[in-house]
Image (tube, rainbow, N blue to C red):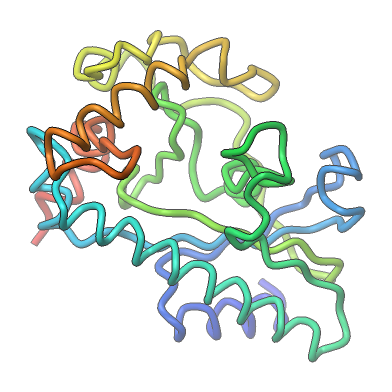
Length: 232
């Protein structure tokens, strides 16, 4: 890892990030990355008790932390982008202000999960969430686009879920097909996002009165998440 990588990584960790990774985005179409060749993936994790609490339905506490972590990520990537700009580099913080700039109203110009897999933070699970070795899918993601000369990781191009079907079997909206992700596979080819959103809205209504599209069952049931939850 270069001195610049270590400098940025340590600053982001000091500000509250749980995982930081560096991605080569040169294989991504230039217009999807604002002509910037590298990315920084930033993740923060949920508290264990929050994820344990959603085994049946989403809770108000889970929704609170969902919103809190999104705000924390906005602050983290804005901080990271400013630090890079002060060093003389271009940087774009992909905050929630970028939502709506992608293909749908729910996507960014360049999906955070794309930056995360390019940065070797994890892989796309059958539930279409990023799965990490340490925390499973109990994280929220954001990212920074930059031209800083960062050393980058080996990208992840295939799922590591194997034969596991836990999220497919547990999904209340039957949104998970069970097909494994690999680079180039469109989300709609293995995951039904409209079915997920519809069910999430209904489960949020039952769980805490509604006003959100949030479920979390596939996060809670993931074996990688469960493994982390069992650690002392």
